[in-house]
Length: 135
Figure (cartoon, one colour):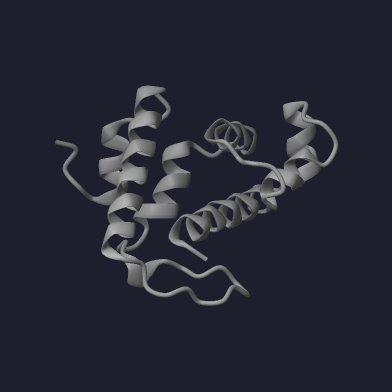
């Protein structure tokens, strides 16, 4: 499993966990969003492609600010190849290459920029979550 696949699995796992933690079911979130039968299940099991917009809609329904979700996902601990959490039951992948980590970091930065641009989070939110100076 490559780095992108593992990261997608981490996002999906955290999203499924947050839905349950907040007392929702996939069906209740799906109904709230007006999505068709089994659509959310297909998204959360990778049978359909999950888009950022859908993640943000789900987070809105369950009452989690995107900054909180992504801070827990990426800023709650040091981030590097040795810290990528394997998906339960998955075969351990080789340590990511330096180029793979650079690509992943660039992806995370683009994601943060997109969230800031859409005014869903601020640079200050990200900085305070990571303990960094927003400069």
